[in-house]
Length: 87
Image (cartoon, rainbow, N blue to C red; front, side, top):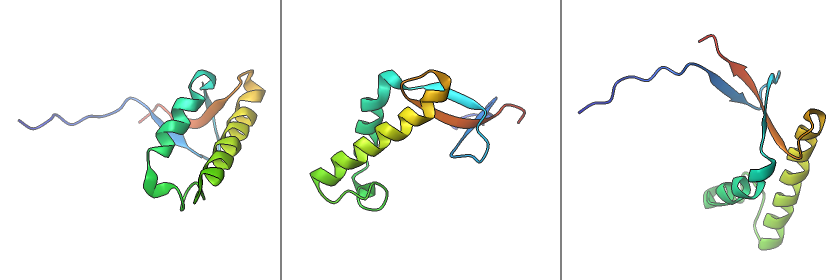
């Protein structure tokens, strides 16, 4: 049985030039990093991690980056997006 087409009500664009939506991810940083690390094919190309030490440095860089994104909004860590809700 085929699935019905899905039309989302909104779209979040990651790494957009103009961010207008913030998500507090302070409680989920380690979960996010664990999920990223599950993509083993991305270790070298995306994370620049060719050893356990390099992977740990990647985690530290990500925590700093997410902290800087959250700071202006009063969050320990955040992800920012451009929200498009008029699709």
